[in-house]
Length: 239
Image (cartoon, rainbow, N blue to C red; front, side, top):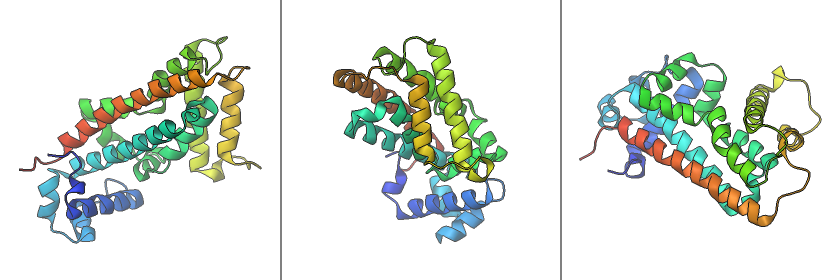
């Protein structure tokens, strides 16, 4: 079967859309399969036709949002390799990630959602691999190797710094009232911060940028494969 059953079933697509909205509004614990089915205009049995449990449905939804995130990043870098420059990549990752309803729930401290996503070893591995820290550890060596970051700092420190900046800006952008007022666009402030912190004095050449972009896209494609495997596991096999 295709991992994305909603491509072949309007009912499955409605179930996913309604689940996304209900979880975003109320959290995992308060949402029931009956409520999801009612919102989607189907019976409970139809939900279970596609997903064995509510937990499988939520996990499948989270994986789909990760897939959308990865697709968007890959498309942007493929269309414009300069998007891999640290000053551009950081805002791209953050703004694209914040489009996910479940990611916003996680950033707001939804412990029930976090527990669901990390209780199984395979699912925890996917969650860990798509965290800012893991993405930094995977991508920063590529940027360093092709001269897109400074060479006068330890690579581990640069990855730590990028992670800290992404988490800090992500928290402030998710809850603007918690941060001091900024006269500029937060994404522009983030870009300037990353450029000052990580980028070399001399701009890299086009060939170096293209090579870094290709290698970075390969990292995200590997993550796509892992996400698709989780989606496949979360669904009821279709005959």
